Amino acid sequence: MSGWKASGSRRPVDAEFPLFSPPADWHVRPVGEQRVLPGHTYQLAFGKDEYTYEYIGVVTFTAARWSRPKPGQVWADDRVMSLGELEELAEDSR
Image (tube, rainbow, N blue to C red):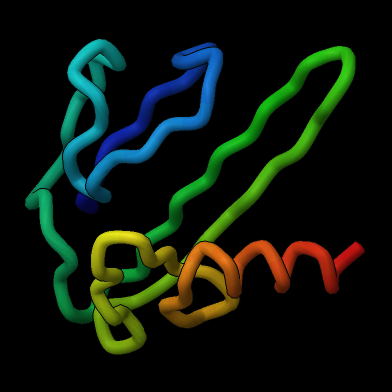
């Protein structure tokens, strides 16, 4: 197993962080190697639960399907895309 987990409320605003480098104030406990390894499946799950807005997201990928996003890009819908493409994808899913 490889990765880390941080449960509970962590940040009141949007957060960006490298996949294997969560913000220091999250106090996570890393497990295994902190890099994408062949033959492993990775999952990033996140959510927000407030009285006015709730959502959950889950992204699953393997090293074979991984294309490292460049600055300004995100991984969504099993591919790398721009933030604008992500917004269009989200609008189309409504």
